[in-house]
Length: 281
Image (cartoon, rainbow, N blue to C red; front, side, top):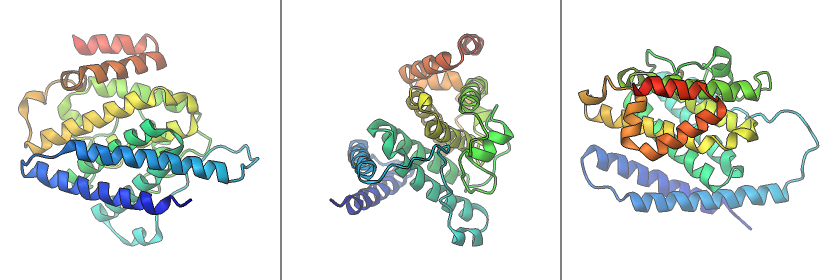
């Protein structure tokens, strides 16, 4: 049974739909989101079926070495400079992690797909340049493994414990929630929110226990990226600038924000509760 042609057609259809959606949004025209979501669900289902087919037909390896995400970068990209190079590598990385998420289930594929789209839009608004603020808490070591500075996008080679990754990601979200929305708007580029997105995917890849928190945190980061993009497109809506990220997210999607809070509280009992309390004051 052949799967790839169908997947290729679906990917092309979704990419075209997103381009149309972005142009329509920029021009203030109505976008039929339902049609786009329907395409994404079909792709998620096909991707999941394809991953299951590969698992069932590929001999299992007896190796016990850590699961590592290889670099998807192409040698030709090394000849490109600046924002164009970053855009090319980002798109290459997106394609790889979307295929990798095929083994995580339909919902995870959908969440990764939407996160990729939102992150691409956010970075494109800044011409794929570097911002002047980094995603909070993430260590230099974790950044190196999850979203390395040379854009090879190599994942952890086992030197970074999975528990440390999950803990760092949880604390990054908590601190990020306490940042002002204006500060979050300066977190673009390879060490900004993109680094947090890459760390999320990395942790999900190497730590099955992180699967429970992954949907809520991925959706929260997607919501933040969309909120920042909306504010940027409106040329800086002043009303949200001095609010905390948590306040903005809670206003836009209270239920989703509470789900993410529950996931964070489960990962860092007590610490998150105290931070959230201070943010809400």
